[in-house]
Length: 507
Image 1: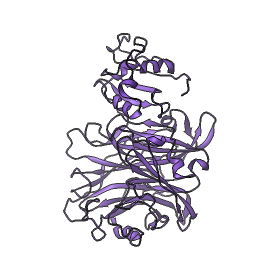
Image 2: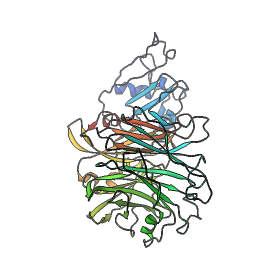
Image 3: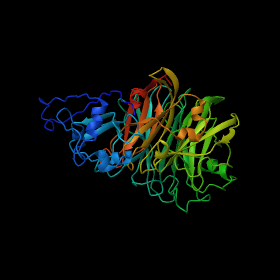
Image 4: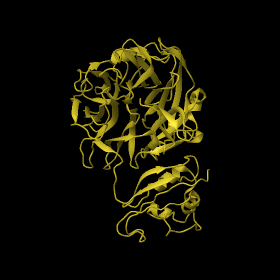
């Protein structure tokens, strides 16, 4: 590990360190070597982890080290981080190298009980009877942000009662949000198609004011054995022609999607749905009026397929056909376009992600070849998601590496860092040339680092790049101990990468 100096700011509560006077917070800088010495110090049993990093008043190395007491793995270290005094809160942890045994770059200690890491868009209070779940966000051509989520009177997924779709619009980049609006209310009626509407996925056309939204619906649970091709998990979609001001009535698309797999190599789909969050629109492939849309589907017993539409969601086809399963072991998945126009599939798995790449042989007809699916996890320095399998987002952005001003593509992958569904963050990895995305195995390994968005229990997340190059990040967290409040934060590439990269150009 490099021995260059780093700046570290440590903040303490008045009364914890008598050296701080007058109620003012103070910063103390030290070399990385000095910090490592203090990390190794004998404070493993302390309640307040912040004290272990001390200032000029704290201790040097003693006979007990964190390594000896807790082991060397990041997963164990993260569990220690969770043991904070109630008056101290770890807001952001940024590590120089996420694969070293000791992680020390910048620890931010909060000198109060709670600090919001973003804006609450849909709040699930501690005593709330009805929770929100599943974020989906898009930016319209005019620059407005539109944020959808489930409102769940039944408190569960589709199949267990009423679920509604709610949304809010921001016209100032997420600083403020308009009134909460209801797109559709489920009836909660058993056996009815309109019983529930859940798991939103959205796309905003870059050249018009059109928006496309799809959800699952009905009263059949996706995983239930009674949900079959004859009694499928239904799907609907909506369209807006005016940037989300008004919406069409829901249109059922169940048969349109299911029949794509009727002659597939693994037989008809028994149950499937679109993965929630961001629907990807190509930057390169355009047919007639629209750039191509991509969306991943999860099919029970068959893993993932990728669908594409050249008419903004009116019709769908399977990318590469129905004879090959891109990710047989996959779960909810996302997709993104790579710099050469090939398509990356990213699917949730316990401990990380699955990746696969589709290479076109005939772009117009959607023909090509899927490569071999590869796992990205701790043992290959991949997108680690400790002790959880959770839906996250994959996004590629153009960036400049600050060190040498080299232009490249930066991959961003959000997951709960863990342990369990907690500490949602964003991993990043630079793609400097085609060799860096030549195969799923290459993409899966050696991700550079991550940015932790929240220190709370947290689960699904999604993100889109805005017109100015910044990132609109939406996630769900237990802000008040209840699952979940739907959160928003606008991030820059510089923030996510701790200054290593900056956004190259606007989207």
